[in-house]
Image 1 (cartoon, one colour):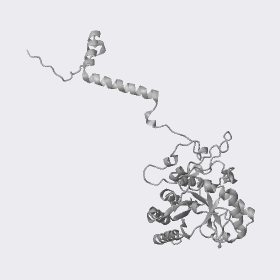
Image 2 (cartoon, helix red, strand yellow; image 1 turned 90 degrees about the horizontal axis):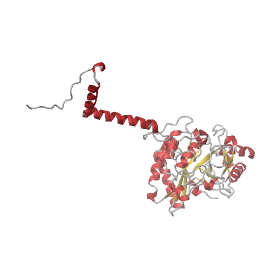
Image 3 (spheres, helix red, strand yellow; image 1 turned 30 degrees about the horizontal axis):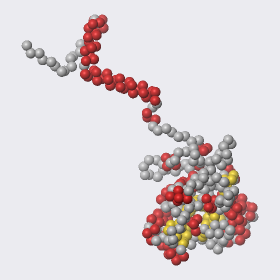
Image 4 (cartoon, helix red, strand yellow; image 1 turned 45 degrees about the vertical axis):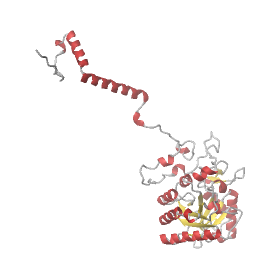
Length: 392
């Protein structure tokens, strides 16, 4: 008689525990173990049980990479924070990070150390000139170049070895023999969108100047220097139509006593660190006063700073690094007009060997300067930081 074996699983029959004999129960267990489907299920169960025990011992795999937490009172330093911390604040994707009120206040004032640390423990030594040219500029403040200032800020000082802020915070530059063109874009820090656009889209050789009243000023300056831009701080000066045209509560007034001018200057200079010099904001009356400009120049000399103006103080010299713009490129806010002024800068550089322009952080200005700078080398000109134009 032929016997046929079926590979289908056998039907199960429910049997109460009271009806099963020990031998019968043992036979059923052995039969179940021999079943390939039940054996595979048991093996999978044991694997999952082992994995669960491993997770309990080693930690939660969903936590991701380790977190680095920096105290907020040290956010202005570099030794406590990993590289790329600023970039990590930007949301994923190509959209611009929203700048909410106070977003850049984390580094609004530089960290000067706790009571149990040396006062300049977090000052950063400058890297080699080659590293500075090809990458970010060194983080401020640099050791020996600052002292306590008004309101908890810091003031620039000349270091014991003679180094000055005008030298240490300027972008290093090496001339290649071609005519040189420099440009200062000012009014930064007041509009977050245009400020970020100038920092992130303009070439690092473009000098950026910041309004002293900007919220989160130090954060903006740090960001600019991390992109390779040297920085100027704007000094609001009295215009001829003051007070109808009022640059703010710390405007330098031509008729003020020298001590009042110095007091206002110190407040302005203590707002941030990392700038290599000052530039004027307005000032058509202030720059015509011999007494006022002498006080201003001597105050900058004592602090080791340069002075770059928009052309209004072109007749003023002095014992500090100085340069004046040859033309303002955006008096007329039209792309064609700005292009024409930039072309005239090129003509001036070709004729005199160098030319310096000045502009404001209007969106159209930033866009036209970005396009212009991209083709400058191909036209036989060298883009230069404004500090390279300064002479005593």
